[in-house]
Amino acid sequence: MSMGIAGCPIHADCQSSLITAADMALYYSKTNGRDRVTMASSNLCQSLKNDHHS
Image (cartoon, rainbow, N blue to C red; front, side, top):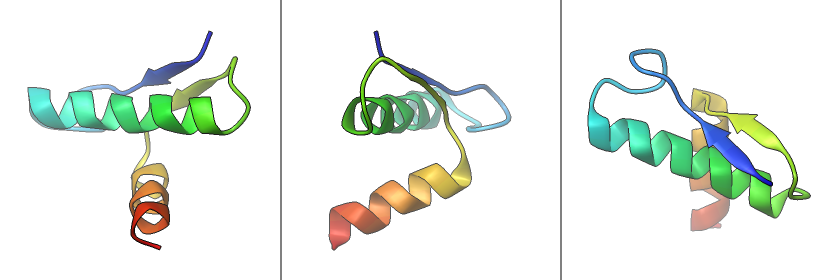
């Protein structure tokens, strides 16, 4: 099972941003080996955005 975790107000300040951060963490978990738990972070989100635009 893969999971993405985000907390408020640490990773986001509103509901939609919180869901986006958790979704990005989940995406990272699924694309990097599955069966892992990933905590959202600003570095993770920036890395995923950069990969998406490459």
